[in-house]
Image (cartoon, rainbow, N blue to C red; front, side, top):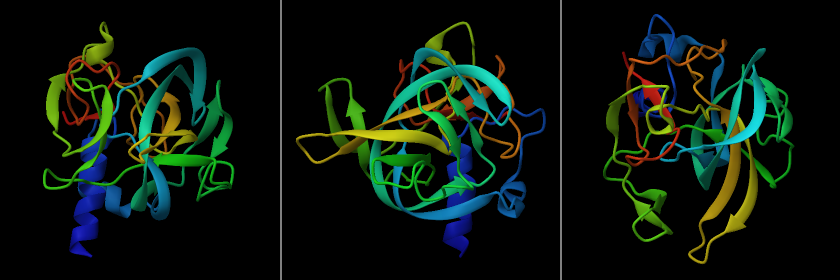
Amino acid sequence: MKKLLLSVIMATMLFSCNTSTKTETGEDIKSDKAAKIHEGSFAFCGASGAVPTGKKIIVQGVEYDEGCAICPVLDGPSISNLAMEGVSGTYGKFNVNENFQTPDGTNNTVWSLFWYYDSLTTVPQFDPATKNWELLPPVNRSFIVNLDSPITSESNMFAMPGIVFDTTSTGVILAKVYGPLNEAAVPLRKAVPVESGMTSVTAAKEGTPYPVGTPIK
């Protein structure tokens, strides 16, 4: 249980976009009944970036520019957000509470969810040097959010709908995930914009546009 609670806290810290005026603590996350453990396939976007689709996405009643992230599909435990619902300009309507396992109830779609992977663990990541998807340890880095540049902006891919579209020659399953640009994943029940000047952490490689990350202060 201790390991599970640590994973909940660290996953929120490392792979979400928290820009509320008051940063939520681990206790806030653990006590929020919107967070629920998911078992099965999910898209891991913690080391991915995103590209704008040119469309809009409504998240919990608030409209943002939409981004698309290419993320590997993993299998196992992950953290979901029952309060997440909205309308993607590309995917359409989505509601985690109504379709907890996958966005449309089939294996053709996955939710992009969180789990904590430390430096001793390898997960599929796109390596710009080789142009291939490889098993690599996630390397977390910090940066100052500056909304004037895509590489210092962010994307939120927590509990967003993904469409499975490819399997690489090495067996990595990929999904296109659609989520808001510069919107925070925490608090779980309210859409909050990301702001310039925040210090953020991401596992996406430096130079990646709209990295999936989390402001920590």
